Each structure stands twice: as C-alpha cells, then as structure tokens.
Length: 403
Image (cartoon, rainbow, N blue to C red; front, side, top):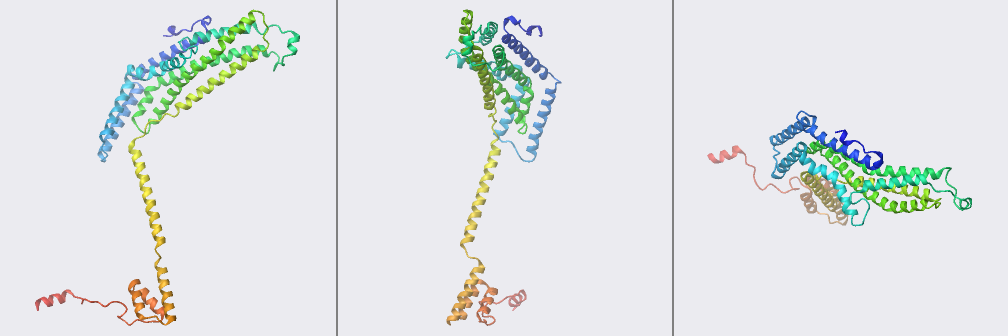
C-alpha cells in the first residue's frame, strides 16, 4: 500500500505530486478504517451493540409506563435503526451515499459551474495547470526584473525595503503554493478524517440526546465539500488571470525588456487571491453550520399546547381583572348606602323600611351596623323575614304518625 502511494518526482510538479499522494493516502485510510471498525469485536461493534440494547430497553420502558408508540413514531424508529445498521456495517452503502458524495461531488459541481464559462481547470486539468503556473513563476524569479537604468530608476517610487524585488518574486511563489495546497490538500485531509470517524458519528443518530453529534459531523463534511468547490473555483479564477499575465511577462523578459514594477504587481495579486481563498473557506463553513435536523413534532405540539394554555390563562386573568375593576367592592357599596341613609336622615326622610331593605340585600351583620349608624334600632325578630315553615323534629314526626 505504501509503495502504491509513493510521491511523484519533483519534476512532475510540486502541487500535483503532493495532492496525488495525499489523496491516495486518504483513500487508503478511509477504506481500511471502515473495514477495521466493521470487524467483529471492534470498538464500533461493541458501541453499536450497547446502543441498540439501550434503544430497545427504552422502547420497553415506554410501553410499561403506558407511552405506547404510534404508527408514525414506530415507523421512524425502525427506519432509524435500519439506516444506522446499513451505513455502519456495509461499505458499499457507505461509499455510495456518503463517501462518493463528499469526495467526487465537489469536483462535479465545480465542473458544471466553471465549464460553461471556460474556467481553467474545470475540465479536470486543474493540478496540471497549477504546476505549469508554478513553473512560470520559477522562471520569472530567475529572470528577475532586468537591469534598470539610472534615468529610469529616478522616475520610479523607492522600494519598501532593500532587496524587495527578490523578496516579492520568491514570496509570490510561496503564496501561490500555499493557496493551492490549502485549497486542495487540507480540505481532502479534513474530509478523510471525518469519513474515517463516520461510523461512530452515525451510531449516535439513534438517540435524540446524542443526535447533535451526528449533526456536527454532517456540518464538518458539508463544510469540507463546499470549501472544495469554493477553492476549485477560486484557483480557476486565479489561473485565468495569471496564465496570460505570466506568458506576457516571460515573453517580454525573454526579449530583454526591463520590468521594474512587475514584482510588486505579482506580489499584490498573490496576496489578493490568498485572501479570496480564505474568505471562500470561511463562507463555506458558515453555510454548512446552518444545517439542522428536524425536531420531533411531539415536542413542538407540547410547546404549542403550553403556549396556548399560557395565553388562555393570561386572557382569563385580564378578563377577571377587568370585571373586578368594573364591579364595585362590598365595602364601597356599604359606604355608599350609609352615605345615602345619612343624607335621607338629614332631610327627614329616613325610614326603617329603607334600612330593612338594605339589611335584606347586604346581610344581617352589615344591616345592623347600618341601622346603628343611622340611629334606628329595628325590633327584634323584625329585621329579617320570619320563618314561614315550622321546624319539625324526628320525634314530632313519629308522634304525628302514631296518633
């Protein structure tokens, strides 16, 4: 296996040789890791056995306490178990649904986007064209800017530092190599690591409390795939600008023309595309972070019922407060009656019949209080209606029946 992934000679291109070696090693890592994890007695098999045992035990516990599964929840549980077992134990299923999508999908998407516009590298020759551009940068660093006459040098702005031209030419190639390797190799390494750990993360899909681990795994994989698409398009745009520019500069230098501003322009261009590549990777990660799995509708229904109940309680409280505010209190009613009786007494029209009527409406204790405050004492037994029915005891009833 190691000999099959030997790095190509440096003469074949630095970016291409490194990329092909990393891609080969990542493929071997993913396939061998899945085979080792799917073998009996591995940590993954023990973990999966424990998870399935807990999953079945939770179903039995819910049945014991009366929380029977409905048709929908039971179907979802069975589909979840089947999907986890299939993806964790079957490499063909894992390769078709996950591995090929993450590895081959970004290249296909980038080709479909870039081919209509003639973007360099969209036809599968990105690595070869990157190596060709790297070779042109090496030649340009050897040729340099040429000998500058003193008369021409007086019209040019001074360089930022001594030896800036050599630094700019060398630094431009370094930035170009870093951008190319980061855009191709680093994304592939991240994807390989996540694919190797995929069976573990898929097993956590069985439970609601551990489903977030599976969500995070999908986000990282999606971010790596989107970053691969963005980096491919960014490198294609960079080649679209650099290839004709480098061809023109090399032709002019071969003709002996002096190019004093060329190092600065090249260095700024490389810095610009390095920033674009970084922004593209950050945007891809941000977009992939928006992935969320749907939450159970049961929890949503409970939340909605709780919110509706709280709204109804608040409405009833507001209604009761409004009614309480509209109806006068008993103390206010008593005070108004006393004030009315005092006014009538002052006018000479206060009658015991009025007091008796108030006593009937408010009660005996408050009626007596009103009568005393108004100076009228009602006769005993006359303040309230008399009993219209005689009280009958049990002994009196038996005596009436015997007689």
